[in-house]
Image (cartoon, rainbow, N blue to C red):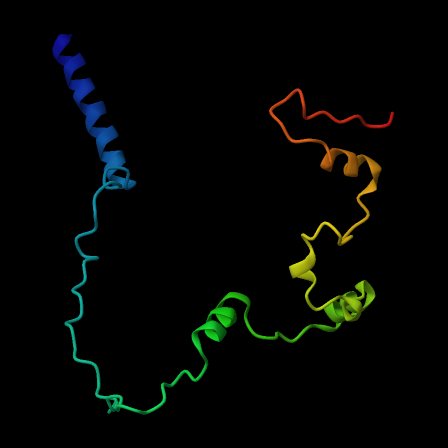
Amino acid sequence: MRIVTIGLTAAAAALILGGCARHGVADRGRPDEFAVARNQPLIIPPDYTLAPPRAGDPTPQAADARTQALEALFGGPAPRSQSEQTLLNAAGSDRAALGARSVAGDPNTTVVDKGATTQTILNAPTGAGKQATATTPQ
């Protein structure tokens, strides 16, 4: 009886492992040795006949460093779509001051209507707790 049980267990294990190998379960974690490809050898790039710079010749970039930095940060004037131009016209972009960004932090410049509550909070004395209080209308 014991030999029959061992034989049946061995047969069941063989069937289970055979089924795994048949359905590809056993080889999921292995790399495919036929998928390996060789790298192309390094080549010398073609000669583009570039001439070395000569002393006294102007540099290819004619703009100064400040102009190049502004161009890199903000880009050039981009063409605007019709819907964007309509939105800008409705917002009054033609009436905006040219140096609006420079004077936006000036206390005498009214950028937006801040309202009385916001003005009270902004004008509250600075401090570390007790002195920095503000009352708001109920």
